[in-house]
Image (cartoon, rainbow, N blue to C red; front, side, top):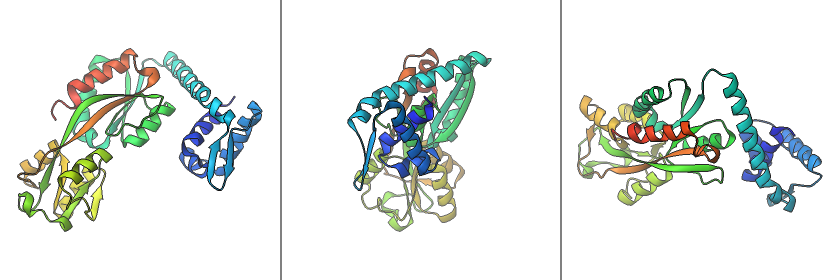
Length: 284
């Protein structure tokens, strides 16, 4: 059986939309339909029903779903084992939340290289939802995220908190912050809820962004006020490009390590998570 058929089945199980699955897999809708038909032909059972109200799994589809996950898991383990046997060293693919990557990932990677000197390390910055999807598909070995996506194949561990502080290019008091010159940081749903509770008048800002480097760029160009990671805020205050806003409460964003359930107890992954706790958030 082609693994693409199983991957397409599991993606359609999540989206319940042939169009959405086609977009996520970067194929045409007809390709998705053809793959599902091919899988149904192999199983001699219909797996989905389509109607005006949407796409829903049949009883056969419901029963096949856990086995499809097991097939994908086995395939990923088999391919990883083959690659590791051929390669001279272990290859680790790591995703890091955008706001943590710029200021904090260097120290952690340095410690990781010292602990696992024979490992090849690939690091990319991304957002939580995509990194969770990449962990499920086997595209990443570990991710450092803000927003866990509950899934039976994923395991999450709390690493700590990343602090955000408000800065301004104007008068450095909370009362002086103008809603029409405020840039809303939208790094996660949890952050948005905390911000709304603390600053209800600022949560309907016309400008917002989900990445702090973008917010810092907008502050430099337009002026105003915004929340930024504490280290970035301190650096801007030190070089005079912005001021810390007095009496503005610090907002804490929880940080999580995420791995595929099959890697939960593997030695390299346990070592990576331990080093994350020691280094990534230590300065925060």
